[in-house]
Image 1: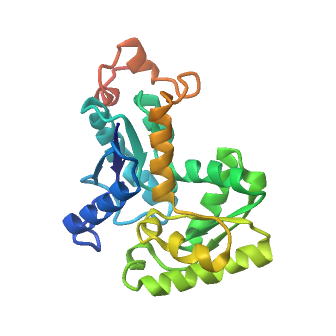
Image 2 (image 1 turned 90 degrees about the horizontal axis):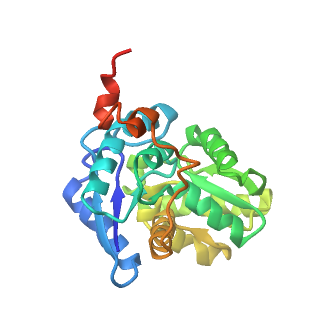
Length: 255
């Protein structure tokens, strides 16, 4: 099977783009089952990082266009490379292959591993959106808390030990104060720094790495021959009827 990881914006912001894409791709290949081909790439347009609803919205048009191209290129599944799952519904409307949102996938897995889970995210600006995201996924009753480590995305890799230490502090608070029995890293960059693998032995509870879990979710969907329901994610009517022949045509339909 062939699975593609799509990053919502240009990787060059704060990174050596080629080196970081190679590093993340190598990690995904290490996580993948034998026989799984991994592709990874960013988009030409989008914010440097995503820490707000506005930045999520900015990344969606470019991601959707690239997602359509990836299906045409023959990829079997697509992973949306942001924990907030921006544009997930739109991509499912347009694509027939499975589109995995890491936020949705890790929440559903966490809900099956314990009674209450907490999300460790980046900044306080992400807390309320993630609470809403979990309600939309349908696991709001199992959400114990969303806690921020207060390190912006583009600073996480500058001092990995600082990021690990901050995650440990908030993880312990989630367990002791919020009664969480399972934790999720609510940021893909934290996942690719393998913060989950670093803190799980210290905390003694499952800690989900969204990069790893979303890949395994995609492999499971493809392996089981499943994709999203067309009754849930209907193709845009203008495309379904033939009135528009491409997503670009949607901008030019006469009234």
